[in-house]
Length: 112
Length: 112
Image (tube, rainbow over all chains, first blue to last red; front, side):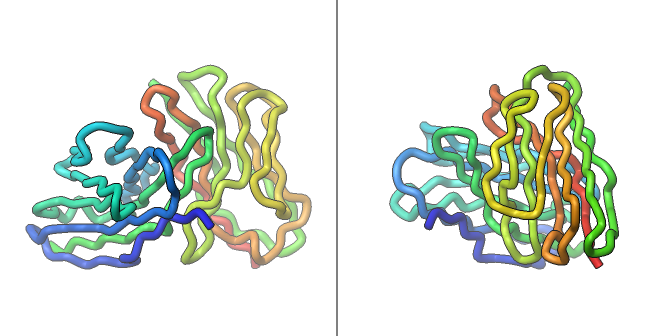
């Protein structure tokens, strides 16, 4: 079955720590990959996306993600997190058509 | 700019009662519209999508229905709620330029 896996359900970090959130998907062929973020009380927002080209993608607020095709992974990273990064992060995969598949989300809590 | 409105933010309803969640989009015409649900511990699940007025596609069999009476209005309904309908419901529209989603702020539905 097609799926998107986010292995870290809840991550707690201190400010300035480095972040890496895992995302793996099980589709073959060409995919588009996304990371969404939902800050408390706000809408889901697009953090970054990968369609093609350079597998290292840079997004807003200092986030980046690396697409490793051989590992079916699209992990999200940030060298130094801030308290304001506390949010829920969703990985998503899109193939042809309108259907998106989302992971279960990772709740990140950054302690000042 | 495009905005999406979804209400109510929270809702507590008894089993067997009806449901109506409304979503409206501004600043765009003929959007693709979506209803997603996030049940506890699970990923975002696509419930319905619509490519135009009166056009509804259902992704999973369930106790819910959707309607699109106007171009920028998408309604999620139920005649009789079940306990299993509890969850977090998100309306979204698809951005054809960025190929990502813009989500509403969501509705937390608790069926008691």
